[in-house]
Image 1 (cartoon, one colour):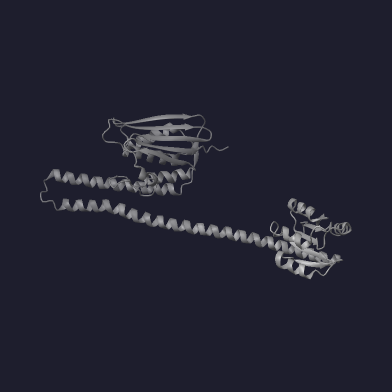
Image 2: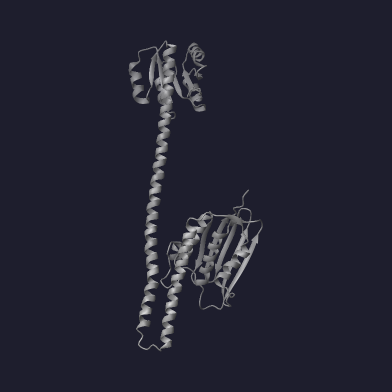
Length: 381
């Protein structure tokens, strides 16, 4: 406060009073003067005024009337009335209505007025600090409310997560235990066909459990992952994902077509991108139609300095419209016959969020599905 010169507006219709006021206080304060309320309003709207000192009796309107007009637009400004008359009724009204800080009588004493102005400035600073505290408190409360809501949502998701993991793990284990019981109690130990049948069912349950555990680990790795930026070779990325599903070569029934056009080096996180591509490719393979001679998967990448536009299209069974809004939910399956973990597309959504990217889909039953991705180029400038 000691190093800051505060802005004082003095309103009086007498020129001599204005000159004397400016001469008396210009060294200590930034003094603005106005000979009528119209000029005073122009100064108020053009400057950050801290204290207004207004004469009560003026030709165009009284000081109280003037302060009533501007109080809503300038609520923090400290207001002082000067009067040479005993306008008790008007002053009381002003104190009650517009919060007059003080009223002084003319002729004013320079020491008394100086002390009043300094006290008014302290009052202004306190009001401003209180206002800032209230704003900060409101912001903090809003942040706490949001954090509490987020925590409730996370707890809800965690409860759902634990329940579903327990359920998904218990189901194949129960199946395996039941099949082992049947094997142990098989009447004819030489019935090879039955033994092989049970072993195949056990293998299916183990594979299902393995898929689920790998998905859970992938989810855990993606959830809080911080992107590591490097240049992306999309052709290499796609080939690596394809080899994971077809280590011995792509089957004759499945055709994977790629169209890649990158006009400038593209930078992103290879781990998160591989998670997205792997899960979308797995989804396209998993939901192929059984009655077609060729299941076609088309991966298109168009990249520039700003972003990469990517499409995953297939001619599979498609997704019914009523399920499309839910497919990115955790553990969601469109039917009970799916062998998937229900985490694949949820993991895709998490990875997309980590990349500040977007994903949407278009799908039609019995015709296929296309996922549209927009991934920002994270090239460092």
